[in-house]
Image (tube, rainbow, N blue to C red; front, side, top):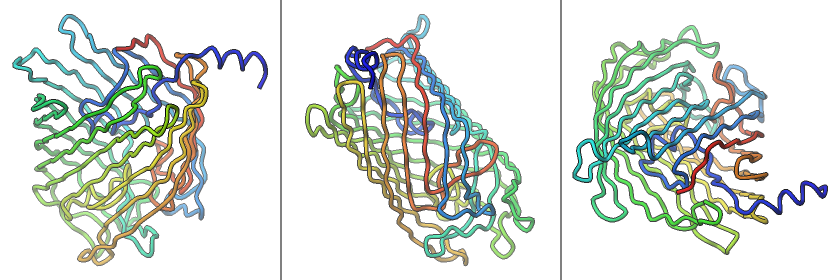
Length: 387
């Protein structure tokens, strides 16, 4: 390291929040901890994947693609001083406005729009840990949601509200000619969120220090889907009504002044006949699924953060008969790192491995994925204002 870079790193007083924002960070958690009152953040870089065994028929391939994320937040939006937040990334688009004065009586009204224009579905079954496709295809969905929430007691937030979503589907290069994709349809329903938060922030570094945020979400949904879809001999129709339960946990445990244990976990339990949601490739497949990371965040000198982690996944998916289920466990790990040049500029990199055939795609125009994933990019922040 040359002398100029060494002086630059020593001049940086604190680290910045390291939790990489994602579409699910905004749609699953209701009031996640953040040190920012206002922020415009841009992340640009290259993302890649490497498959242990290439199989183009299942989208398993080696690929490097561009990646970008944009996050905007303002806690004092206009005269109402509501919270305006927006996100755009490869995994989806999100916008919300939360206002505590519209109804009053300490009730927060939340308006949200959500979109996933580049969604992939992997309809298949497990065979000794290998994903055997019935048919992979593309989709997109657009949703509007209105929520009404309040704090029932200190740290416990309850929110419920209706939503409406539109689904569209299309064939891809991975869709067999014998596979019938679903017809486009609309869905509507209601959601209930329960969120318990005890997080305490490290004000020097602007990062969570201890405590947890646990969010539980229940859905009841009705849809206008008509007709069967699937492969020959295994075609089914969506039930007119389905239920879903999801959970999301971020838990921070201090190990020392410069080290923190982190447990990030998510899971769900859906209607077994909810074939569309159970084959959503943006997360672990199945009507019962779980994804957990045990992480050790190490702050080195205030400017460098390295976080190695162990990861485990669980998937319960219908087998090839459609009457029984297979349960599979997958394991892996990786490391994530940040190099903070200043409060406005950081270098971000990670490497991740899970021995599963179904991992997120690294492209938006086609479903390309592999057991190994890696990223290198820069994070730029404009107008960041601390709380």
